[in-house]
Image (spheres, rainbow, N blue to C red):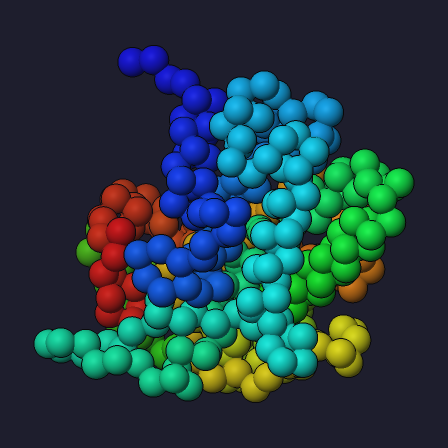
Length: 361
C-alpha cells in the first residue's frame, strides 16, 4: 500500500473548505450544534498541520508551497490566506468569550443527560458547564495559533491596521490559553478509597488479573506506587484539596482529571486577579477518558516547539510547570496500573472496568 500523508492532508483541507468556508464566510458547526470543542477541532484541521509540518506552513506568504496555495485557493491568494486564518481565529475567540470578554469552555450539545430509554434534553444551565475536553482542545488550538502569529506578525510590519488587529487577536488568544491551563490545573484530582469500598473493590478486581491473594496485591501496589504517592503528597499542592488522605498508606488512590473543575479545587494564587476562578462542580475523582484528553493537550504545552518559539509568558510557564508534574505522575500511575503483576497484565484485559464500574477501551 502506498502512503501519501501530504496528499491526505491536502485532501482534508480541501474537504474542510468545501463544507466550512462558504461565500467567503467560515461556517461553524458539524454533526452536532456549534460548540467550543468541535469548533476548535474544525479550525485545527487546517492550523495544526500548518504549524507542525514545515513544508505545509502558511505563516509566511512568500514561502507557501504551490500545491498548498492551490488547495487553499478558496481563501484567496498567498497574501490573503494567513490573514483569513487569523480572522477566523479571532471569530472563534469572540464566539467563546462572555459579555465581559472572559473565555468560556462550554461543552454545549456534546453534553447529554445519562438515562435509560430516550435521553432527556440537558438543561440550559448544564449546557453552559465548562468541560476538560474544551480546556485541552483550547490549549492545543491556542498554542498552534500563537506559533502561527509569532511567525506571521513580522510580515505585516508595514501595515499598521493589520498588525494592530493581529496583536489584538494574539493577546486574546494568549488570555484564553492561560484560562484553559487554569481550568486543567483545577480539574486535576487525587481520590483515595478504602479497599473494601465499591470503588476499591473495582480497582482491585481490575488489577488482580492473576487471581492472587488480595493482601499480596495491596502490598505490591503500595510498593510500586510509593514514589508516585510521595510526590503527589509533597509536590502536588496547587489547586488540589488538602484532605485527600495520601498519608494513609492503607488506602488505595487514583489520580487524573475529573470531567471539569473539581468540587474541592482551590484557587490558584499566583495568577492575576483578572481571571475568573469559579467554584468547581465536578465530582473529585478521575475519569480515564478525561485524563487521556487532558494529557493530550498538556503534551503540546511540553513540546520543543512551544519552548523554542517562546510562546508562554511568566504566568503560563509556571502553570505549565505545575501541569508537567501532574502529566508525569499521572502517566507513571496509569503505566504502573496497566502493567501491574508478574503474570497477566491488566492492560491485556480489554475493556477495562475502572473504579466507577464503567467499561471502556
